[in-house]
Amino acid sequence: MKLKTLVLAMSFTLPGLVVAQTVDFKTSVETTLSQNPQRDITAAQMDQARAAYDQAKLSRMPQFTLSVTGSHSNNALNVFGMKLQQRQATFGDFGFAEAPGPGSTSTFDTRPRDLNKPGSHNDLNTRVEMLLPIYNGGKVESFQQQASAMLHAAQQGDQAVKQMLTYFVYEAYEGVHAARAFIQVAEQALLAADAYIQTTQNLVRQGVVVRSELLSAQAHRAEIELMHEQAKNQELLAFDGLRTLMGWSADAPIDVAERVAIELPNLALDEMIRMAMDTNPQLIAMRHQVQASQAEVRLAKSDKMPSLNLMARSDWNDDTIGFSAHSYTIAAVASWKITDFGMTDRAVDQANASVREQEARMRAEEQKVRMGLLQAWREYQNGLKKVTSSQAAVEYASEAQTLITRRYETGVATMTEVLAGQTQLDKARAELVSSQFSVNMQKAQVLLAIGRMQHNQI
Image (tube, rainbow, N blue to C red; front, side, top):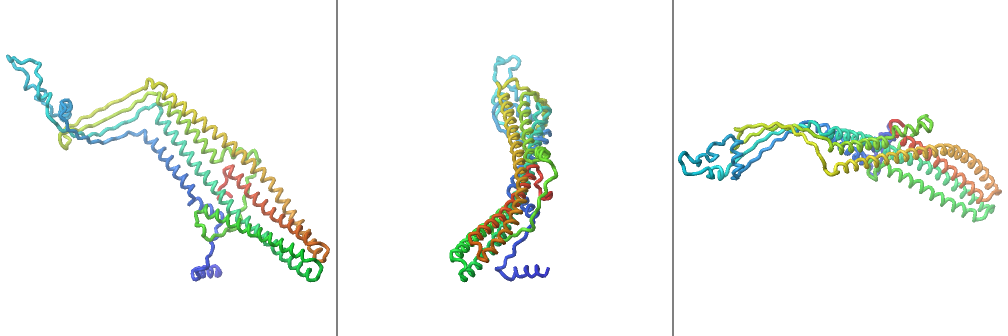
């Protein structure tokens, strides 16, 4: 505790000292899931689907519209209609003042000026209207089913993205530990190479071996140095991947905690395949997309069905701002499209084709998941055997190299034999590290296929 406090204090007092933040696997995943832009994409998709679902539910509710219309006209019909709506029409507006009286020589062919040329008039109409859908051929229900399916598809898509990001984090996290194991292998090889050079230099001075043996040892060390640099570069690349996933800057100091061991469920292969078909979130999302396409077919077919809507309207008309003349209208509108010359049928055909496309995509994804699971499982089983074999190879190569080194020190063996033995040992150690990393990644791929790649379940 005192040491940790001292290090923190020095990090504030010494500008050149930067302390790397150590993150465990759980923290790495949680940070990634909270900051990675892929989650922002799926969150936006869920918001869109949720809004569409709410819109579908609310489409059953009545719609209220408020409108205010101001008119000014000298059209005879419009003016007469305005006055009627305003309850202002008089007998004089009909031109009765110009009608022929008793004993008049005029005829009823007289065109009354007050009726035909009434002058201009104003009207201010204030209207409140309600439109209530009663039945629309199942369109509202189909729209709601489609929106619900898309919402579930978006939610499962988000789960698929979360598990895929968790897999990528594990790959980078495990990659750091694998690279460090390779670094340790290279460092062991460097120590051995330095010892061979030191021993060879002594033997050259003693005249036991020729100088070419020393040159071979030095060349071998140069190759090991390159392997060491490559391993350190792999560690840097793994850290770069981890920082990118977590949304950290490229130069942010970071370190990882202990290695994470993945445990697979104790199930047979056929049981895992069934689990993958049932619980893989990507497959579930695609099944919901198929359901959404099927709802689109029903939505297209609803245009062939009759519709019934109820309308209620309240109007106020006046020649100025006011509510002096009120009227109301209630109407029920029923309609049924007789024919549109096949346009609706073509829309139904298009929707059916979309269903077939979605179903084909789903089947293709099922095959992909099944094949990926089979491949990961087979490689995992083979990897277990390879780990066991590599462990034995390291033991045998290490013992053999000890014997060869002793023979070389006594002048019995050559540097060529020593370097060949050391190369075999280095290769066995590297193969062990590689096989252990491969086994862990195959287990992660199995969990990803069956929908269990979650940091709280690993």
